[in-house]
Length: 298
Image 1: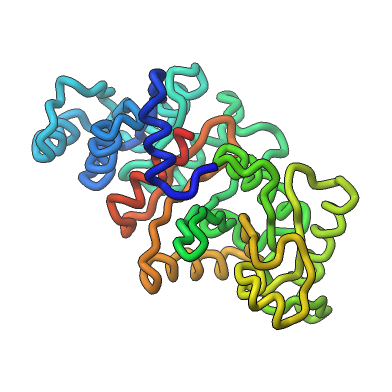
Image 2 (image 1 turned 45 degrees about the vertical axis):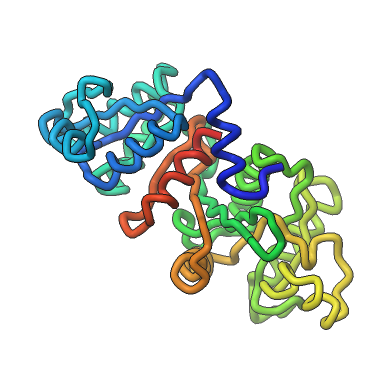
C-alpha cells in the first residue's frame, strides 16, 4: 500500500510500459510545464493536440526540444477535444488531460456516445487524494469538483469510483466514512439519512469492496480520540481511508483547505469513464498537478 506520493511515483517509474496521455488544447504554459515534468520523472508520455506553433514555442521556453514530442495540429478547442477522445477510443492513448479549453467543451467530447468512453449509466466523479502525515497514509476525498448535489444512488456510484482507486493504491478493503455535520441521524439533515442508508447497504452486501459507516462527522472519521470521546464504536471511525462528502460545496472547501491552510500534498483524479481524466485547477501547484498525472497513470 502506498503511504505517500513519492512511493507511488517511484513504483510507476519502474514500469517499462509507459502510459500515454492525450492533452486537448495543449498550448498552455502550465499544462506543458506539468507534462514536461511528468515526462522527465518517467511517469508518462504525451500526445499534444493544439496550436503547433504555440506548443513548440512554450516547450522551447521550458528548455524542451519540441522534436522529441508528438504534436498534433488542431487549433480549434472543440476539435482538439474530439481528437483526444478519438485517440483514447482507438486505444492510442491511455488517459485524457484537459488543456486550455473550457471544461464543458472537454466533457462534451468525452460524453459523445459514438466513442464509448463513458459506459451507459456510469457516473463520472472526482477524487482528491491527500497525504495524511499525522498517520503516514493517503486519504481519498470525493466528490470535490464534478457532482454538485448527488442523490443517494449517485453517492453509491461516487463511492464505487473512489473504492476502485483505493484498490489501485493498495487498500484491499478501504474504510469509507459518510461525512455529515453530526454523527447521528437527523431528519432535518438529509445527508445523515443518505449516510445511514449507505452504511446499511454495505452491511447487506449491496455495496462491495469496502467498509462503510455513517453518519460520521469529520473529526470522528479521522481521529480515534474524537471517536472515543463521543463513544462511537465502529471499524471505520478514526481510520477512514475514504471521506464521502455530502455535496460538492463541502468537498471543494475541504479540498482547498488542505492546500491553503494545511499545505498538504494532494492530487486529483476524475474517474468513472473507460479512461482516467486529468482536469487540474489552474491554481494547483506544479507538484500537485504532477500527482494528478501519477494518479491517472496508476
